[in-house]
Image (cartoon, rainbow, N blue to C red; front, side, top):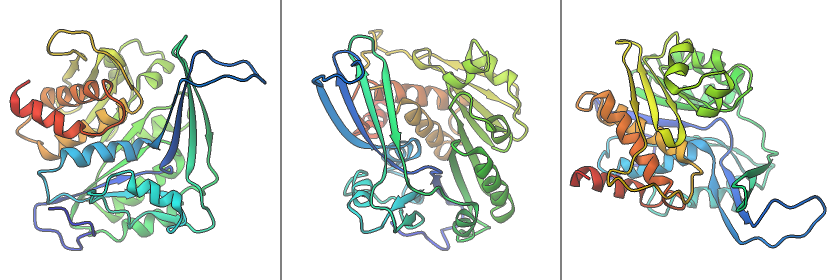
Length: 335
């Protein structure tokens, strides 16, 4: 099935897929409260859920489920983590499941740290608001550390590197290094957080760009199509923008064609949102699956539709378990 080690000389024509995380995998605590508390007050929560988070790890978890029939592809996580023997690191690795064959050998282990980055999310039942408090004392990955990892791959082999746009200056340097060290690499980036400096310049370096609705609206765009046509993509052959309950849009630079796919339940029923956290990460996993595993036999419209329907399926359940199985079952059954 899957080889959990990096294959030095993969079979001709295969593609190594590497998910690059430029921020740590997170421990996330989700607390639901009746209403947001005032300062220096006491309130009983109605639910508590603790699980691993992080944009790239979430995408990686879903993507591995979708790739169950593609055993020539090897997935890797590259991330700063606490000490290799720490319980925090073992929890991150075990969160992918006992049967996971994701390769963690390229993670950078901070032996002086014993705790993973943490994010505490408080959701108000009254207003639906989410308040986040983050903590992270892990040192970020450096360009030199990244370069050592990249040089371990075969420059003649095709690879796909996906970046979360957390630290634009560092990531931009890493992408330029990749272009020199691994000329056959395909690079995608996620542009998500409004107001973060350097994201437009980062988008200009990528082959595929994923924009979030919040970032697009912060730039004054009223629709995903407006965002895609207004933003410059010097290298990108494909740009995509998610728009929540309104689905997503994609723009092909080679044809100039714009496609929009709404988020609809095929049965015509209203979508019951149970857990929207990670929906964007799921969309990215769906698009990567389409682009890598069905580059020619799926149209761009089908790839986009698959990713939107996968994200729609995700918001109707807690977490990510079983997403790939259920989605591929719908594809086979024509649902």
